[in-house]
Length: 404
Ligand code: PMP
Image (cartoon, rainbow, N blue to C red; front, side, top):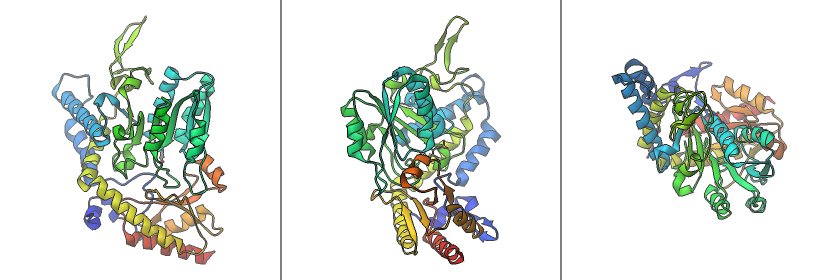
């Protein structure tokens, strides 16, 4: 059982006020707040362990290297990967997908090929593919989204063809909250011999993910959305595929031997980690993963699912409420519109009440076009949010409604 009051005490920022009101932080899909142990891990690393990794024989460098590699092992275990060679540290989901798109495209894509993405992707799982498609001449195919906010799997099946070289989809939508049936999508794609990449930015913080059980060929996520620091993220890739892919960036660490005539590349995962990595970020990410494991991923999923059901029930009672995304399988993200109130008016007025929500297109403009709306108000929850905070949101919305 989650003791939410005890958990809240682990997050110093949750005790603060904004505009003289207690902070109600409901923007967790954008970034999560940090527990004291993560803040301490960063401070401790700079106070006691700081030295550049992988290059020095001196004590501190070795210690920092060991800690970074222990963090890699922690990530491996957290997402159920087979080997640390398959765990590449990046700056976040966006960089993970850019790395993947650039390197996968160079290795495997040519004119006439097709990559399938979906109509509910974040821009970071659209634009990197468009950039590569523009260079190499392959085509993007889009899985349509239903009115409920689910992927149309029949349409997906009919998009699969011998031209398809990769499917890249989000596990959980950052707008609709939909949890996509990635296992089924992966099985279907694999039955045609097609690899699948998964954007896990909104799933890893909320549900237990095991990349091998899912069968994912690539899986990306961001540290800052799972209570870790900004600037660190992960790309998991199956070794067999990563080995065939060229480096993304050149520089230190990613090489074995450099001459002006020819350079040979380092082994996995270092081939994809050019330059000084954010080793402090990876150490603090490991601390965040320890933290969520100590709470329990199953407990987190259960608590957030109950909180989300409670919020949906209360929000749906508000006259004029329109929830965008009503898939039965959902995570703790709720997008909505109320009557004719513009999302940014709603967001600004809620902010004055101390309630932090996000408004706009949420980096998913094609999805907004599909739904025929300019944007939404989005409340996104964590296991440190409470029913009382949901009640504050509801009474805040009622107050705004009364003003219009
Ligand atoms: N994909 C999804 C589904 C997201 O929600 C986000 C963040 N909003 C991203 C990708 C990009 O993550 P980051 O900005 O941490 O790179």
